[in-house]
Length: 297
Image (tube, rainbow, N blue to C red; front, side, top):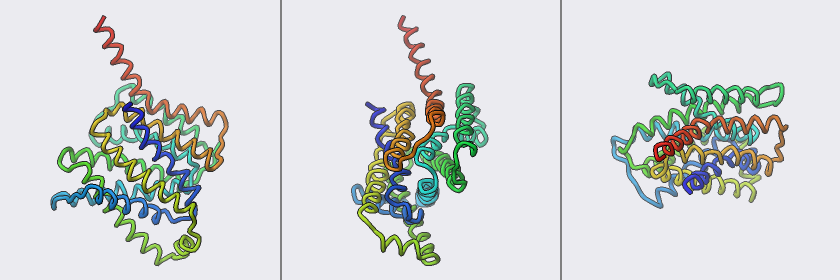
């Protein structure tokens, strides 16, 4: 049951890429990011009002800038420049980059299993993203790497807070702060290059509205609330397996909404990357169960 619950926010996050391309293809990423972040934060604030202490503002500002402002913008750059399936599958390489980050920064060496699975995932990704077999936008790929970096740095900062700030306060105010920053930057962009914003207003449709509602309410308000709430009540193992829904949603929505198709070897590479990302956790669970069974006998 826990894994099924963890799959819900992961699934909605995986739909972001296809939904954005299908309903909001010509919208500026900065505008999309602002519309996703600030209203979501205000909705959460209305549901459960909270107020950070004066000592909390600096760290919340950093989290809002990294976790929301920069990250959301990068996600929409990916969504509008890369195939949905590629974006969803590519983001599961976060554990590899996190492993390298903690190895360099904290001198925390990965075990042999983690290192082996990381190498396999990198090899499969190299084969999947091979320019000779698939053409990908370089801007989108750079945005993907930068988004992964944001996840690692932002997660490390959030974890360091421990029990100092309530999770709802962190979630609400990083969305509000990030949303305000995005709104300001988006406003500057609209003054410098107004044409995309004018087109958005003149060509606004029900399809655009449905895309915004999906991304705002399901991907952000529901998805992030469930994620942070479940994080307090579930194990990392459950979240690892629940995260499988993210790339699967990206692949499925890309096929349904955008008619994305790939060769059988490419689908096998995607499946291999997904398995490699959960293999360390899966094998560790099996090892614990076998050890437990041996003790009982």
